[in-house]
Length: 116
Image (spheres, rainbow, N blue to C red):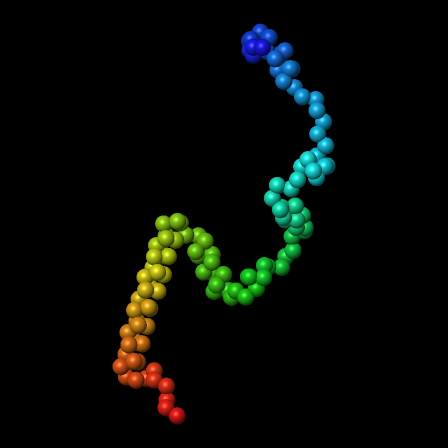
């Protein structure tokens, strides 16, 4: 009951003993279930001919928006990170300015509701 190793001279016999002539029927859903639900529908939708109409999200974009997307798409990773940091700093500065203005409005009693 030992394992028979293939020798360099008799390798063909060993390889032929490993061959399987079993015929598997791939049409059976029981034997080959869909591994991820929805993949079959997705692939079927991808086979449809491509239409020339733009996606729904692009319909609302103006030419300036598209130019911005192209500009951002052409940036390197480092440049894109620099742009994101700049936007974060700008958002922080705007928050500070809004806080100052709200405090100013409070001291000037601008934000009080009129008495009836």
